[in-house]
Image (tube, rainbow, N blue to C red; front, side, top):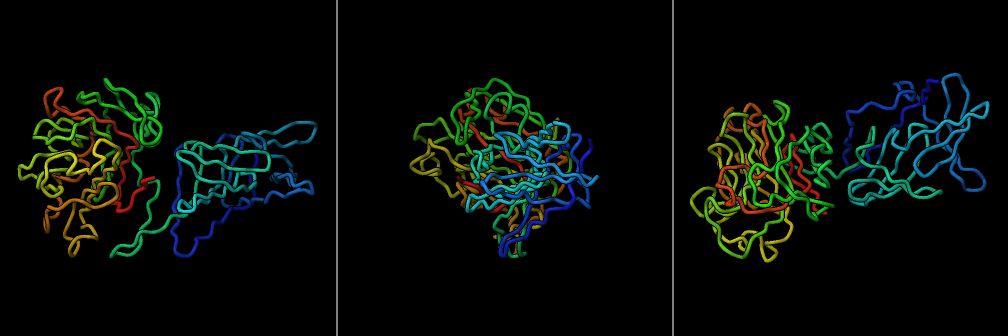
Length: 384
């Protein structure tokens, strides 16, 4: 039978918070549908304290059920049992700062739980349900807004163009979000979160192609990386080069890597976006750039906005590097608008990890984890 839930869940926006929505592309399971006139009947709790789910159908009949380990079971007429997988969620309200979550299933049941890396643990009276993020049909959540000179902004799922956790070869090829990824000669090692991809000092170890025109105005590329390096200085051509973002068949593009003190971005951690560059102050040892834990995990982010970054003078800065959540770029081009030969997806469609711009072996080995590419310029990052 085809069922319709009878009322939309309305999630209030908490004062001082913004709401964003995750709307994965896959369709809900056939047989369970919602529409603009749907009604959700909240699940009652009986005198024994057991959570009961109640589902009202279009014909007026009602099904009652209980919460199981991975599903909701409803006993229908004639002894039939209707089973609903837990991934059939209607909405989810979560506060990342408090690590709390409230989930509403399409059948009307509501549970509260906590957030853990890569999944939600929803604790009910009958135990804990783990819901993989990739299985969520619709998710609304509250995040603390970031204040800029332009006011408040919200990051939503449509801004997340690519997300790869590199937890296994299979998951690396089929990322959490974005296009399929081609892998080369790589290894998988313990990561910042779960597992990570290790380049083994090889070139062109992973690649994918982004959809057109999504990075034309602004963008963010963020990831965790761990370098296999001694406490030594580095020189041009013998250091880690994290990625290269360019038009297929062209060399011009965007990169993030380390550079010797050769005048390019003042040396150190450096990005080049066509003829625009930025980097940290001088210093050409890994320790001077990354600190005492230079061989540990560090979070990197390259951020750009052709309308100007809010933290710049009169929004005249367009590119910035963040290291472990702090803006570290010193030398950036001012008053030079990004043009069609730099930050547009006419050029930025192909993404390569450890690009072959150096001789094999000169690309210092490193591990990379939790790579995300956004279509917005972010200024705050999840460093947990």
